[in-house]
Length: 114
Image (cartoon, rainbow, N blue to C red; front, side, top):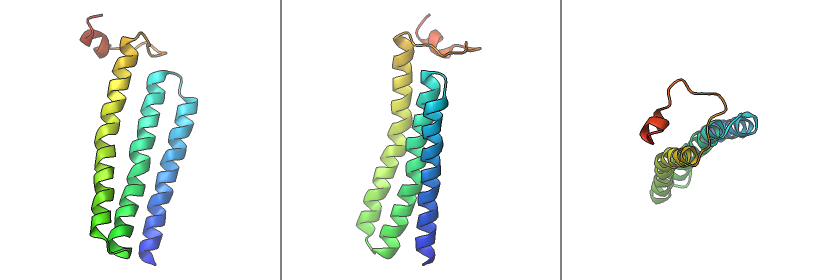
C-alpha cells in the first residue's frame, strides 16, 4: 500500500514536470529557450517514472531483471538527452539562428570564430 502511494507520487511529480515543460515550450521566446524547456521535460519528467518503475518492478513484481532494464533505460535517457540538446543547439546556432535577446558573452560565436 505504501509503495503504491510512493510510486503514484513519483508519477505525479513526473506529470508536473511534463506540464511545466510543455508550458515552457509554448511560452518561451526563442529556439534555445524552448530547447532547454523540452530537455527538462524529457529528463526530469522521465526520472520520476523511472524511479517509480524500478521500485514497482523490484518490490511488487519481484523482478530484478525488469528493474535493471528500467534502470538502464533511465541511465541512457539521463546521458543522451543533455548531449542531444547541446548538439541541436550548436547546430541551430551554426545555421544562423540566434537568441532573441543579445547575449552578454557569446561563447558559441567564439567557438565558431565569428
